[in-house]
Length: 224
Ligand SMILES: *Cc1c(COP(=O)(O)O)cnc(C)c1O
Image 1 (cartoon, rainbow, N blue to C red):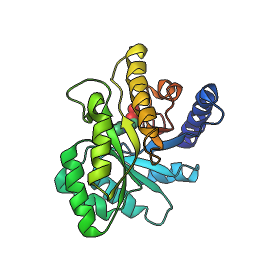
Image 2: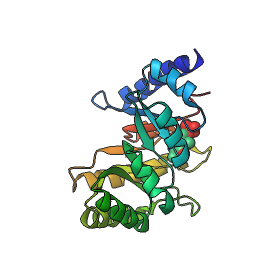
Image 3: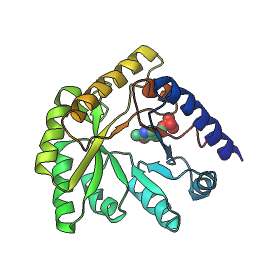
């Protein structure tokens, strides 16, 4: 019952923020299931939740295989090591949200090409200016988006993803999301395929939605 209640209350809170932003805006909730097993995912599924995010290929593999008969949408949201590319592609995820380097893009492209496969991806941008965080620097994101679009035909870029600074200062978080939104708008004016702005987690989704996020990735608030 807890998960069902968590989801219900979260969706209500997302809806309030959505309406503050724009009643014409649509937001997809990706429930980040990395903390839980398939039983909890099944509970969330029965409460109506369809999209799930995992950040380890092995976990995605196990959970998606156990739940393969359900019409779930699996998002891979973690850093992808090159030696896990084959495994991830075999699972045919709905969206890979953390394409974070040109080197990874080129390794992915090679593998996709030989598999005659395509993969929907988001470019991860590092909006927090923390060198420990992954993703493309804000200054190079536009150019990298172009480079990947031009040279990796099997990678279908759909937009961008960011993780804000882990801070209690809402002004700093707001600035991460605002900068990411700015890149999203600039990309969208060039590429028709740019649709998804994935930002916002349990602690900061309200600030993300105020900055135009149309996909939020929320774990602890769903599975607490
Ligand atoms: C874990 C994780 C989330 C969800 O974090 P919560 O704070 O539990 O909502 C979102 N995005 C990424 C990339 C994650 O790794």
